[in-house]
Length: 434
Image 1 (cartoon, rainbow, N blue to C red):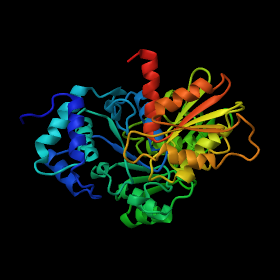
Image 2 (cartoon, helix red, strand yellow; image 1 turned 90 degrees about the horizontal axis):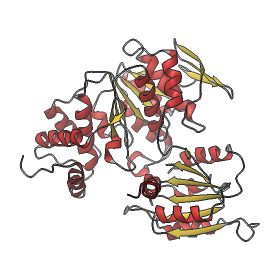
Image 3 (cartoon, one colour; image 1 turned 30 degrees about the vertical axis):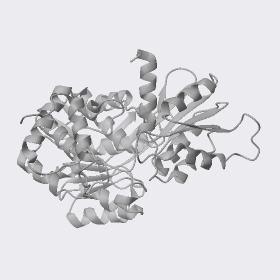
Image 4 (cartoon, rainbow, N blue to C red; image 1 turned 180 degrees about the vertical axis):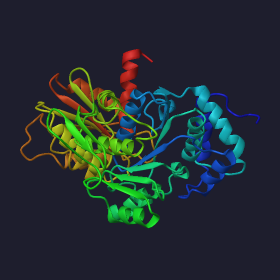
């Protein structure tokens, strides 16, 4: 195949240029056709994870526990913050540029005249990479919805839906019932289907019954309990007691951890995992950008909360942190999100807003965000107690917050992945000089 890129950056640039020319068709026919031509299949158990929020955390916990148990684990997770390689891990290590280029070449060799979006092409490439890596288990995070997401061309042995809330309404519908049906599309007949949302949509339950999936519901088939020191998990036939809390902070992490442990119970014969491996895996799990508290002063929190459900959890977590004289928010979000619904649960915690434009045509204008937030100024706010400033990008917004915050204050960077990634990149540059 002449004239194909030979480096990862060149390949990604080509795919981005092609993406603009491909109509985004919410269907799996194109991806399935190329998958069949490639003979793409997994020879190990596959765990697939969908959900409005919490899917990345659940994937990370599963990976961490299974690595401690000695298994060769493949993980597909997205999006990335700084490097595309973050999307694919084998044995806990990022895929190399060479591995990814080889898999991109493999997709290109078989796609023929089938036009693929950036996400479809890269999904097939990473699944090709993982399928050929001699894995003991593959963990695949769903991107958008479930039923029509490119990842869903693979049949999962265990499918997890972490939470169902309102997001991506243009594609998935504007109610929890419509969105729940889309996410339930990853369930398979006769296979375990786990839902850790405390109030599973009726549409999800009905779809599982209709296709004959083995539905595991939180509160019926598995549950958790705990105190301030430790927590316990109970499944259908397995209990795990005296567990340490996951190192991932946040109010919903026990829901995510319970879903992960339910999946491990389903696979206990193929992938047995001991109690100590579960404890160690939960304590050592890492996932950037999910209520990630950075070391140093002032306190800096990174969180990709970009929908009302996630913002409510972030607000609750901020409320549990203890006293800080002032809270600065670096905030940027996409125009198509429920912006008012994201701001509402955060408003009571933020004193100074530093809002930013994002490097995407879908970005909400920082000027419009500033207008919304200026209108929320508390009536009793004194001079210097409330402010709103707009910036051209997240790096500038973060630099402003850092220049104004005292050592006992805190800065919360939240909203789009672009917001958090922009601040991560700026911090990396300031530390390394490149």
